[in-house]
Amino acid sequence: MGYLTTHILDTTKGIAAAGVKIHLYKQTADGQRQRIHSTLSNNDGRCDQPLLQADDFSVGVYELEFAIDEYFNASDLRSDGETTTPNFLNTVVIRFGISDENAHYHIPLLVSPYSYSTYRGS
Image (cartoon, rainbow, N blue to C red; front, side):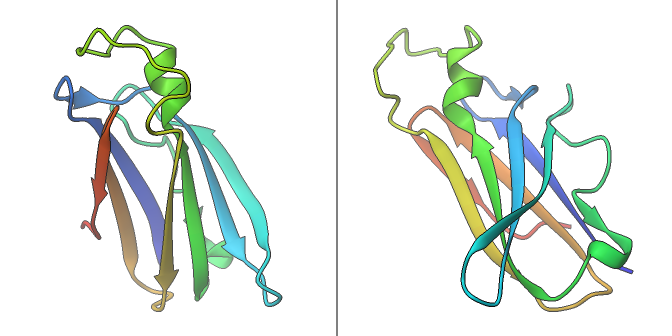
């Protein structure tokens, strides 16, 4: 069976982003979002367990939602010395598809207060 993992890196400081609130949603047949998991990133910027695995891991469209504004607001990690309300980045949402129920899907998030990028990792 396949599984889903993530990893969050704060590119401003070059460190793992600990304590980021993460929600995982699955798109339903009628196009709605159904929350199926919530967690926090650990000190390594990862989750202690896969976000999705075993019988819950199935073909479909999913969204990972990262509370990046809360992460930057709750720490003194902002190297630019600037505080803005609202933050430039609030919640980062990555929508992706799972097409192979036997594969490992790893979705890293590289983030700063003003940008982010992602890719399908290994």
